[in-house]
Image 1 (spheres, rainbow, N blue to C red):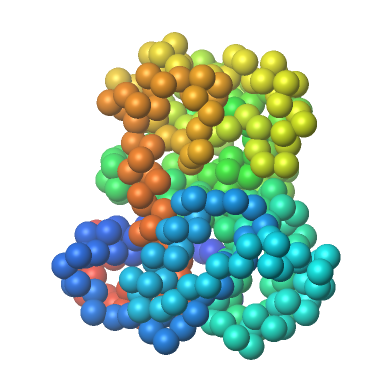
Image 2: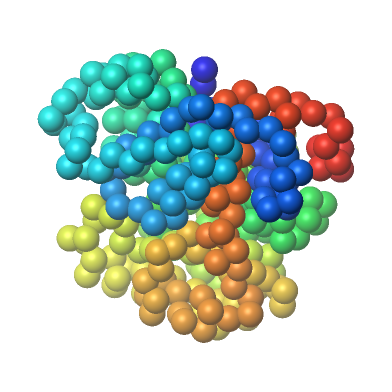
Length: 321
């Protein structure tokens, strides 16, 4: 039994294997080339304290297509640490289900839950980390460019939970990343340190600047996220002013490589962190990125279920590339 709370819970090899497995699931979704159903007769509980479109739907469909069931619990139904203690909820759900996906505010909540759970716990988003998104991001890049091209990612905007996870997944995959963030909005120091440690072994280069054009120069991927995350709504005016120069637009894209792609985890605030032209243009792979949440969630669920077919079968061509 293991958890996925941050990228520290995965080895470099497992991050790569998850990308390979996600690609296999995507390629075989309708052909039934994968005959195994690692979640057969299991229930995945989705315990969400924040609203969600992609995380909820992708996990529900992933569990179903892997032979299992899912059950969604809204904030009103649970009240973690309020209506009932976190430890008590963890013990109860461990007796009922086989996996729990938690989407909450403070990362300490999911840590306490995992300490008291006897089933795998998956981080569907906290204020510190969004590992499922980070894994999907590098899978999408891996799928688009192939496994052998050196990649440079330009992340432009807030050094938030998405940035923290992208830093680590990129480092795991040997992808270089430049982050353009305003002073005072840099990524979490522990996440940065963990990414730098990984980069020593994988050859990734990590650079932080406050200049968006510097980050975007000759980049293969231009990535951005919202300036105001859930729970920060009272900071909207201040953040909009601070991040005004960090919009992904035609000027930024001209600095990147001609075949650079645009990524955004969604939902997007059009006209703020990204323009309509960028989000809807020919270089955007944002909606492929969104689709890939489903395939990566399958890979994550299969890994934590101990599925040997996907992760240990040496006959897989992808594993031998």
